[in-house]
Length: 190
Image 1 (spheres, rainbow, N blue to C red):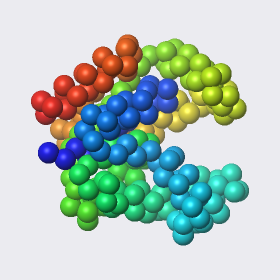
Image 2: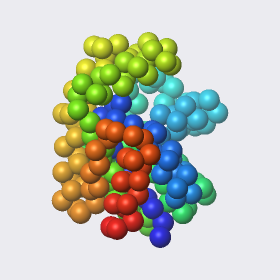
Image 3: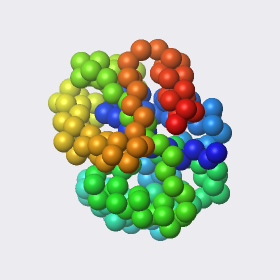
Image 4: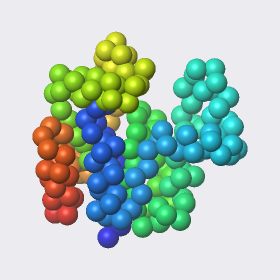
């Protein structure tokens, strides 16, 4: 059965790491909205040019354009047998847009993997990543702000997916391999 998954959780919880492991396990692409934007910008696609007009001004790309870019990516050949989407949706309007595009593509969502960890653990992980990767945008203030935005805007979306019976909640603390095994075990039984 094709797996079409969302992976959600606060910054630093390990979404990218787990998406990569799930991608390998299920043989489907892990699709990060950040990667999609970078691809479109780098390759000068029409969608990339439209996004660049916003990013050059330091503005967020509006939902309408983000939705188009995501739909374009989910419609590519390598996503025909499934995918893992990381970083989208982030708002109630994006949930509605995703519902609409999945209906149009005739590709219903299989599950939503929700990872969580204690606030202090997230802060430590992000600080470590900032040091290792030299990420200037990972200051303690910026991290706290992004975690706060996640808590206010994105975390409530988990209730939407829970009410639909799609939520698979997993503790994002502990050994990477153990977390991955837990996700796969829950997905395989649902």
